[in-house]
Amino acid sequence: MRSTALLTDRYELTMLDAAMGSGRHERQGVFEVFARHLPAGRRYGVVAGTGRLVELIEAFRFGDEELAWLREHEIVRPAAIDWLADYRFRGTLTGYREGELYFPGSPILRVDGTFADAVVLETLILSVLNHDSAVASAASRMANAAEGRPIAEMGSRRTGEASAVAAARAAFIAGFSATSNLEAGRTWGIPTMGTAAHAFTLLHDSEEEAFAAQVAALGPGTTLLVDTYDITTGVETAVRVAGPGLGAVRIDSGDLPVVVAQVRAQLDALGATGTRITVTNDLDEYSIAALRAAPVDAFGVGTSVVTGSGHPAAGMVFKLVARTDDEGRWVAVAKQSTGKATVGGRKIPIRRTADGVAVEETVFVDEPAAGVEGRALETTFIEDGAYAPEHLGPAGVAAAREHHRAAIAELPPDALRLSRGDPAIPTVYV
Image (cartoon, rainbow, N blue to C red; front, side, top):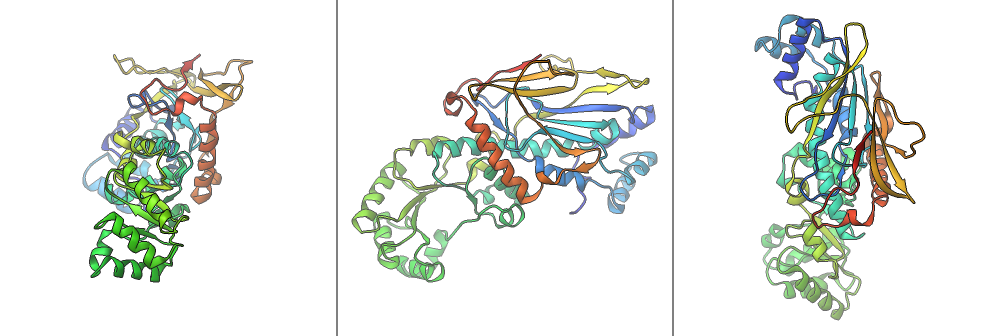
């Protein structure tokens, strides 16, 4: 993997440089990532991106090209450049598993190490977690609204090329069944889907010719897009060309609840009772929920999921909460500015349940209280510079997907409502 070391803000390195000048850069520190609040009306968030982040941290090395650029542009002084030449993260990274749910104040990720080792990772950590968690949080709401029906991510054309792969990964963890993005399929083991767009139909001299070409290439089990011209005619043509064993039709326009009911009736009348109906057309969690009573078999979502359904960043921050002094003693530190005050000290979170249902996010500061029971929320991703392989690659994605299913099942019923409301459970610091 190419170096990720310059995927960072300049002030991360200038802080390092100045701390080296003051002799404080080797102090041990604890940084934590958390969100002060959820997007307005949301009841939970979903952690995503951590497994991807670990791989990016492993590639956070300053090679000759990166060092030469820093030197040429006088970003930091020579002593700092010499220090960066040998950099690799040697600390410990712990936090919520991918797919886990979080709430306001949840200590989602903790970075333990020297100030110098940890501070340079801030931008990379936040850029990954803020994007991927925003996508996963929206995707989870959409998957819940679909009530078990397949839902595919198809938003690559609505975001940056690298973000598209990350978004497909996050959506799959949160319950989507497939992606249109081939790189996401290759890199992360996500099932891929896709057949044809309107351009394919318009290329041919008739809709029938286009359908025949697609069926010849992909077989009668394919999905035919029937709304390029007239939907009723398109459905009739699709069944005539592919036969009653046609796999599916896709509808990308119109008043979907009405159109879907009409298409279902038409397919059944034509003998295509097993032909599925897939809908797309700028869907989000609310329009998916509005189709619950309609005979829709599958959904495809693009723009809304890759942009976090109106909230493209999760609002997470990265704060120093504890450090050592000159004698090596630990000191809790916290920002105290109005509206952005933080809680100092190392956090230990658990999720308390009653009869299998989550009731509280309990966060202990420095030491857990004896006798308090709950599900431990932290896992280790990197320990003293050694990477835990179970969080990486396609296997890590599959494990995160399964963990999300279990975490969602633990929520109280009201947590899955799309109406505006408070977080599903309170976060309590003790």
